Amino acid sequence: SYELTQPPSVSVSPGQTARITCSGDALSKAYAHWYQQKAGQAPLLIIYKDTERPSGIPGRFSGYSSGTTVTLIISGVQAEDEADYYCQSAESSGILIFGGGTKLTVL
Amino acid sequence: EEQLLESGGGLVQPGGSLRLSCEASGFIFSDYAMSWVRQAPGKGLEWVSSISGSGGKSYFADSVKGRFTISRNNSKNTVELQMNSLRIEDTAAYFCAQVPTPILGSITYFQHWGQGTLVIVSS
Image (cartoon, rainbow over the protein chains, first blue to last red):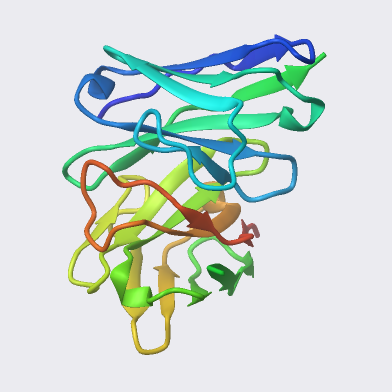
């Protein structure tokens, strides 16, 4: 089995850029997807296939991939972006895996 | 608008069974694979199981393999998770999620989510 590693926490001031990384050997061959989960709510897909943004997701959310690391970038962070963020990937066998999650704090 | 509504959660003793159901609306159900994802209190997301759009293929996390089964009824737009031999560590909110393709593979992700149903395994 493989693992996806995220930093437990990231803190930024409003208006700054937040970068949340997700690392794993499998990411060199597989896509990563990102979810935002606010307290008490279901997760929300915000980035899929490394860099694609679903309709309705603000343009300040973007994704970047390089080698075995993918990065979620939130430009011009707003207070409402405070949440937990999870990366996720899949094996061709159908097995799916999440990273441990990163708590984004807006100072 | 796509909607997913889970039901069936509750309190169950260790070793017991529970059947979760997810009713879907707003999309052609058989065109999409479906999954269950859980989240223990204060913990991260954990994928549990997935089933293809036709129901012909299913997959399970190692932590539930042999104890949980997944099924779907495309005429009723429902997907169910039968949970047997429940353990305390199965305590979690269980989310139903739509996969944007009928087939599961290396590009599987979760496009839409329900609000979850809480399962508590305790004596």
